[in-house]
Length: 313
Ligand code: BMA
Image (tube, rainbow, N blue to C red; front, side):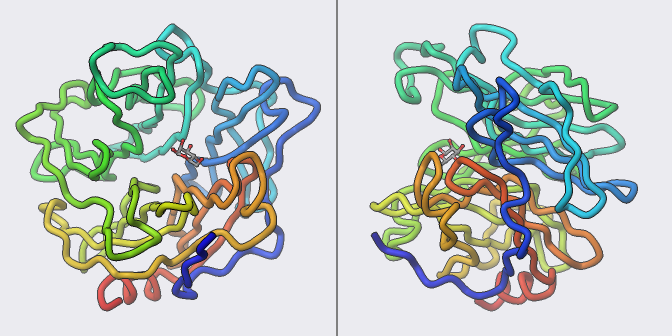
């Protein structure tokens, strides 16, 4: 097992892990992980993936004044509703655009939607988009694309050249997509941006998106995840052009975060730190992440330190 040296930018919070499974609940009994988090009006809002007695993923909601102490709803806010989601709703990412909240999540089904297309563990996955005006009730708009192995999708926090924009993962590459209505995503507007790098062990096999891109004067700061042949999940950073994110400004060679703590090295899946959220509050980046697909952790850094590494690393 090879643990790549990380650039020491992020600090783990001493209160970690900050959210644990709840043995008194039937739907979040075993694992809580990979949360979306936004900060709004003095509160952190979290939507987290949970697995309970039936091992089907649902999405729970919690809020917190400090990002450490969470008050959670007793029932999930998103649960599978049809055959396309019967194995679960996974890995939410939430963003506010023009006063409306959008969640992207992976719908996981026990049967492939198109038997000739790539599948996921023998089933089908759909990269879904949903909308909410109150944080709790979510209206499904539909998938970004059908009939292929596509997930890790997220929305940019504003329009680019008048259109909604998304990053998605059409394996093995991260792609851009654009839409006028968040329902239709024309194929001719899609383009690959970057993929695994064979020369770096830690990101030689697979890469994917993390949380919502952070807008900076120097470009979109985008955190991502990657693994090599030993399946150790690390977190990297890449800087993309503000108006044309298919233009990579810089992609540093070393990761900024990797599994080290017992609850990151063990858990349901070993050696995993997997993040779907990096909100910025008062110039601090809050990296919320799943540890071992089992619990939720928090690490923070100064935004300027991350920008510097993304630009010059
Ligand atoms: C990815 C996703 C994540 C998970 C990770 C590590 O493919 O399914 O939900 O955290 O694998 O197991």
